[in-house]
Length: 307
Image 1: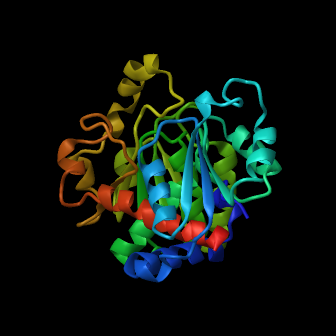
Image 2: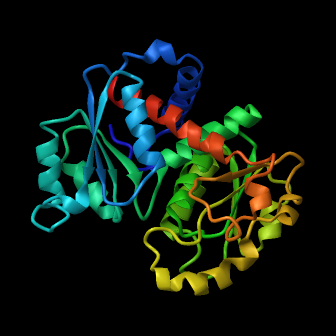
């Protein structure tokens, strides 16, 4: 079993990880030897703080071991080996592979040829580990998921947005996305179509609008992400700042949400860009709880795949 996309997982499978995450967070000592003797290879093509440290800690705290491998210094990175051959080789060495890559297609090729579980640590298309932590954080803070409204404001054509579409639509969370109009800013039609199908089963509502105020109105939580994801060329920053300016999360925008609404961000954040400092550093901010919960959901994910 792999985790390439939450679209591939059933609602009970996602719920199993969320439930186990809660138990592991509350009673970590019970799982201190759950992955004893197990090894995880972590392949990094993109830089990372939270993904690398949380997965290393998740393995260590369960008695396992994680191996960090910088793809830029590898035969694959130098163009001398295919992802398929890398997968066939490392499957002989380790119990699972985490990959944080630029191209989602490379991840799917890796998984196709690996004989051990493969985990998506982020690609240009999806970020399922982050969405698991986000869903866990929402449930932890609000006691439930079904019927909550999550407003996502900013870049709709984003890996986090895509994974939230999958996860929310499967678990009955209403997701309202506010983003600029245009092909380069709205979520992938393929992801929207499948999320709509999942939503019909769960009873959730999926909305996409250019109106940030409409999206945030009555929301239980407001989420944003950087306007300059890893795959965005740096020279586009001035144009994207202009386009996304109306989607900055301010105190005024937060006031349209429900009283006590959470502010969420997957980090790293640029204060004064996609969010005001007063919001991300304010009492409604859950961003560091989200960051911590990466550890607990990843521990549960690893135990599910390897335990």
